[in-house]
Structures are given as structure tokens and as C-alpha cells.
Image 1: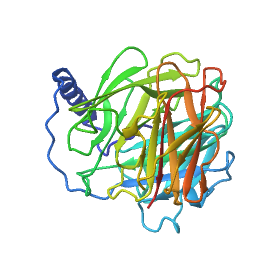
Image 2: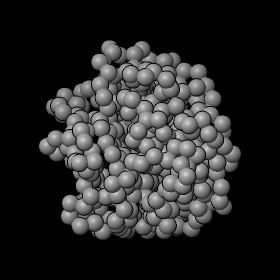
Image 3: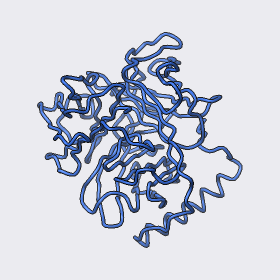
Image 4: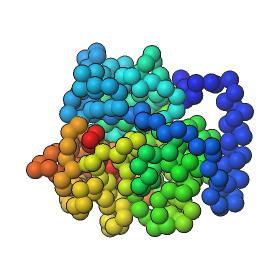
Length: 369
């Protein structure tokens, strides 16, 4: 079901060549040469919040928390069908095409998580499949946020940086984007561990935001950022994935990185967005608010409350990813609130077995505008 490119007949050869080139770049520890420049085009993207865990056929989720890059999103909304217990397909209209990545975050006060099962072009639209699970690994209905985005060419506004990777379980890059025009790379480590390399992006200190999501249609899987090492030539990110028994697990995954740009990487960034990384403290360059205000972190961790002043503009969305060693995972306890222009996001994290835990995380919020 994993359709990522328009031409699959030559994909194995191209994949092998791409992996060899990427590994050479990693070994050299140097910035790869940029490929031929493409004409910058508007990105294809869409996001939604499924506000009903048991939606009827053709359900239109919360209109104030969905939007996309197609013409007249308010008149041509995202729709969702439930196709099984804890299994959904999200229909993004008029943005069908190859490549891109998807992220999902559970919105649930209980210890559940949601992951991507697949995405593919259907007619003129893009269908994204989302599966949700209990700590035991049993499928379970849940509300969630979902994001699909695809980029090409160099950004029209060069400030900041943005990139993404979709890697299979072996470390083969299925699709990728880098706003400098360079080529991202992945190397495989031990079971459930990968090293992602995003050349030319970010700063030599921790700056920006990361999001990671498991992609698996067969069973429950959770992925997170295990470590993050910025450098003068780019960002090195260690991705770790686990199965429902909390054992390291080889699966497909997606990763996105943004610095001074929104999580969905649009060609023309919105005016209102923000992100925050909590790693025991709040590193200043990972705590960003496009209004110039300062985001704050409150709460005991059950949940955390992240307040982003002056950016709450519907339509909007949010994503959360856990950080650090171990198999703890994070999501949103409830939908984010909009109060006096501030976006308040309630981040809950869980230990293996589902007990609430105070653990580091990344959170990203963006409006469509």
C-alpha cells in the first residue's frame, strides 16, 4: 500500500544509489552538494483534528481546526471515514501527488497513541490512514490531529529552514526535502535506532523543532527523538522506535525539522505559529513564538500546559513528539484552547504501561494564516 512516488518501476535502483550516496555523505561528515534547483512551487499540505472517535461515514471534523493548500478549503472540507476499530482514513481534497510526509498525534486523556498507517493519492486528493492503540497494543478509537505536507523547490521566503524525511525500516529514504536544496540522509543502527542527517539546516546549537511519527499498517508502533546533535553543517537526529511491548522495533517513520518556520512547511509561512522543546529546561532557541512573545510551560506533567501568547488564530493544529531515552510517549490530553489570543496546549506523556510521567517533549502549533 505504500505508494510514495509516481514511478515505482525504477525505484529499487534509485533507492540503492540514493542510499550509497547518502552513506558516503555521512562518512565524509561534510555538507553534500545541492542538487539541481527546482522552480519553487506552492506546497501541498493539509491538517485536521478528528473531534469524534466514532465518526459517521463522510464525517467533516471540527471546521476551526482543519485547513489546507487547495482552493476554498472552507467550502471543500476535509472528511474522515472510520474503517475499523481505531482505524481511520482522512481525505484531503485536491492535494494528491507523490512524496510528502504525514504526522499524527493522539488527543486523549488516556494513555493512547496514534500513528500513520499509510498515505496515497486517490483521484485528485490525498488519503492519510491513521491507526490508534491502547498501551497493550490493542486497536482503540481515539480523537487525533493529522498533518500531511509535501514540499519542492527552494522556499520563496528564505528565512529559517525546513526539512523532512520518510524512511523505511532499513534506513532507505523514501522521500525527503531540504530547504537548502541539499540531500537528507539516514543510516541504520541497532534494532529500532536510526541516525538522520539534515545538512545545512538550523544552527550549531539546539534551535528549532522536531516531530517524529511511526508509519506502520500492521501493528502498533511509537517513534520519538532519542537524541539531537546540532552542528555547524547541519542537524543530526537519533530516531528511536518501539512496539507495543516497549521493545525496540524496526518500522517506517517520518521526521520533520523546522527552524523559524511552521511545522507544515508551507511555501509562504503563516503569521501565527510557535514551537517549544522541554528537555528539563527550555532552551531559548527552541522556544519560538512568531508574535515575538515568549511561550511558557506550566503544570506538573499530568498534563503540562504550554501557553503560546498572541498566536491563536483558527484554523490551527498541533503536533507533539516525545524526547529522550526509553519508550515513553506523548500526546495532547485535550484539544488546545484559544483564550484572549493565546493558544494553550495540554501535553500528556505516558510511561510503558500507561502511567502518566513527566518526560521531555517537542510541541508545535501553527495556524493556517
